[in-house]
Image (cartoon, rainbow, N blue to C red):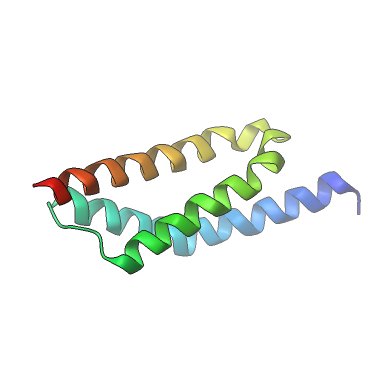
Length: 91
């Protein structure tokens, strides 16, 4: 198995985890802040982990442009959630 095949395997595993675990939780957090609620400590820890994981895989994603839009959308969603959560905290 060459390096590109290994990277593709890792990306596929990450996409599966994103689809089955992370994305539903992220969307639930978005819904929570959109309803005016504040994030709890465990919510913030989860978002930090998602962002850290995205940064870890960024070099690999940079080699596979077909996944760059997905990563950009995930980061955009992260920004939306954190911005709205901060607004909710201030209100």
